[in-house]
Image (cartoon, rainbow, N blue to C red; front, side):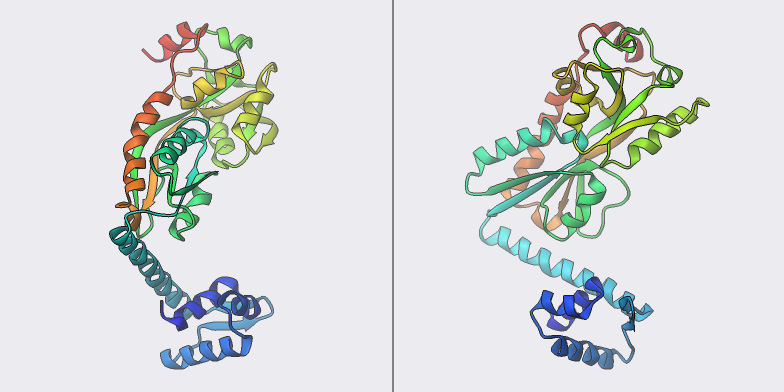
Length: 313
């Protein structure tokens, strides 16, 4: 990409001349000279120099929008041409959301590693909202998570499954033996929450408030779903997690509470850059995902089949 725009984006994103100069490998005077030349070319200032650093003017914000689009197309053109010339990648990074954590994403990574041994794979876990900027920036190649909003420019999606968020409890909890679970059955219970997903508490609060119940009492927040399952096991705590994790939860002696309707549900699937879709490893990943998701679909937990049949005929 054109050097002046690279320098401009560095200043706009860093908000500091010293940091921006270090990022692009220039001295601060050289960087300042480029910014001044760019401002003369356009006939308007792009930054206000304040005590808080370099703040974009209205014209600067418009140039940043265009420069980011140019940078995106430049990076994606390189990726597309690389796929045409080599047909392979040396690294492939996957970012997986909660519904894909414990079975689908690890199984996908294992399959890909066998079929593409020349590619170094990386698997990270985080919610889609935090991973999406890294996908756009080229730091993640495939994101697995909720299909929310409209994809940004250059990003495509493929729906893999519908995710239902439900409560889980210890197998010997009285709720696990109930023929039917209603919102008021969850009142006055304490919850262990997966803290990376900010939507869980708000959605759970809405679910309870719709039945005129108090907000949930959050006993603790944890960084990993597996940790929340382990904590809940053997206690009277509840946790909220995707129904697709039923098999994994059973390893911790947990069962899902089959509500008349889930706490909330949403489509989920794959996010990827248009420029990377023709790489064989990407095409293979997109082919494998529906099959792996079907393997992970929950069965009816032993001892809870009566409630399950009632809620899900």
